[in-house]
Image (cartoon, rainbow over the protein chains, first blue to last red):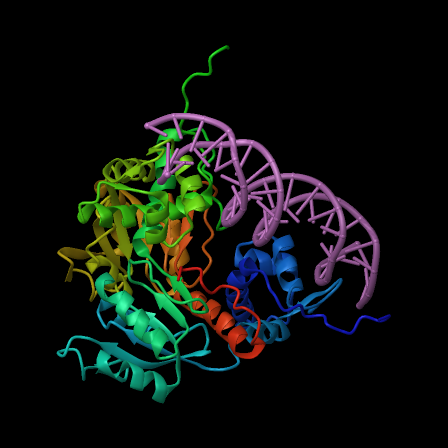
Length: 231
Length: 231
DNA sequence: GGCTGTGAAAGCTTTCACAGCT
DNA sequence: AGCTGTGAAAGCTTTCACAGCC
């Protein structure tokens, strides 16, 4: 083979990069709203709270979407990142556990400028069932499998108490949902090939407490994690 | 200097380790509740959803708290991790933005088995002020500085809309709060030495969507991020 | 002249595999 | 015999610094 076939976009984007693409996307959308046409890596990086070398390296994994001497075209980059993240299609989301948090999520309209649609709300409490939350009727958890099938749910959100979370996760997986966002404070066991992400308030507070304590007693030492979110 | 002074606990725990200590702590507390006295790295690791080499390496940064041939004493390790995380003292937390999410957090009682106390709830909406949420009277945001001082708040939680978040963060910092947990979908700018952690629903969903799309079209390739939460 | 894209270096994290203690 | 604690290897992420293009 003499001339390499044109394969500019390398499948296999580093996980650390994937985790930052949504942040870049948000910064770009806000630039777009303000009518900005192009942006340099320096400016976009600063809007996203990272340094420009990291931003350029990250974007280079998607392809060569910038212009040397100029920068990145905002709209074009918004589209490329959206496509890479799979936001050009709509993902149906089901939320299980309609307590305070479930309700908060259901009502949280701005799902990162589209890409997601809340398709169903489920709860185990019979008193909850039938209530209208965010323009959806809460259904009983017994209907999980049926709802997943009929609504084409591919992402499950778990906002139940910890004790119920594993059971819900298992039912999601058996119903064919292989992306789960877990707010319950437990470690979920799922088969290989299922992607679980966890959001945990008390873990975040504990990490903050660790650093706060360092600042307080260690003193003099530079706080290790500070300044991560830019100055 | 001939004999090294005994400094077994190395200050400077890797950030990746710090982020896992709360998970180990939770697993240990659940073992404690069940009356388990000792646990091997293998069993604790599996309860925490990590592998045992990682767990042992992590714990080795705190000190040598295990017994070869036996394992770790559950209660002792709970205490050591709690102390390392700064949970032997009580941290006063203020929540700003008492919408659905703020209320959900205020009512979320089980703050990782203590270490934190919700000391104040603040909101900009006059209709909100005075309402009683989770046994606290919601106060107006104008009182932020006064509340931080009088209640000794050291951790600020921001659950406002994105547009207000930066202003609140700045006021927190100026009032002397240097640990912030941000739920608003914006990148906060804070001075060096201030620790900001971010929790962002739509970012998590977007990362899930990325992997889901990979599984769907890439097909045949092993899903990169799957299996992270153990099988 | 300005700014992207990228090899190479540096730093950090995970995993291996086993010495060392009980 | 069993299980921890840890050097060393492997893998991943960030940062540097500059060649290459506009």
